[in-house]
Amino acid sequence: MTSGTSPAAARARRSRAVVVLVALTAASIDLVAKAVSEARLADSTVDLGLLQLRLGYNSGVAFSMGDKLPVGVIVAITTVISIALAAYVWHRAPRAGWVERIAGGAVLGGAVANVIDRARDGVVTDYLHTGWWPTFNLADTFLVTGFIVIAVLQARPERTVAEDGKSTAAHPANTDAGDF
Image 1 (cartoon, one colour):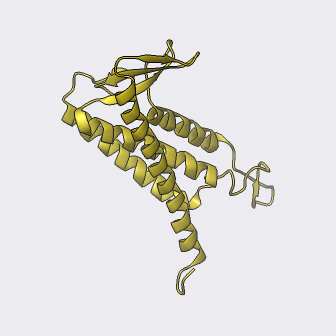
Image 2 (cartoon, rainbow, N blue to C red; image 1 turned 90 degrees about the horizontal axis):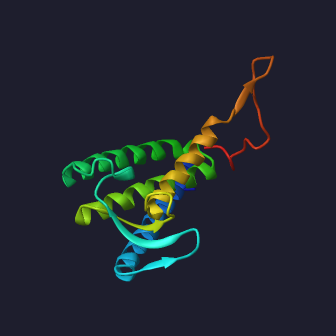
C-alpha cells in the first residue's frame, strides 16, 4: 500500500483486478476453444459420451432468438449489455466476496468473448452439443454458471436484525469468502 492510499481503496483495486483477471482468462479460453473448434471440427464430430464436440454457428442470441436481425444490431445490443455487466461487476467488486468476484468475472468474460466472436464474422461459434440442448460454447457456460452463482449468493439471507437492533450474521458462511 502506498502512502495516501486507504485500505479500502487498496481492497477495491485488488477486488477489481480479480474480476478483470477472471474475465480475461475466461474470454481467452473460450476464444482459443472457438478457433481450435473451427480448425478441427469443420468436417467431423467427436463423441465424448454425454457431450459431443460439433461445430455450429449461431446468428442470433440465446436459442437463436433474433437471428433475422442485422448483425450490427445484435453486436450493438450485446455490446451494450456487456458494458452494463462490466459496470455492475466493477461497482460491486469492492463489496463482493471472492466467489462473487470470480462469478462476475466469468459472466463478463463470457459476454465479451461472444461479442468479440460475433463482431468478427456475424455469428457466434458453438462447439458443445448434448443432443437434448442447443449447441453452445464455453462462453455460454461461463455466463450461465456465473449468473446462477450470483443469483444464489444474492438470494441467501446475509444479515438478520437482532432484538437490540444491531445487525448480526445470519449464517456462519457469511464471511468475505462467500459474500459478494
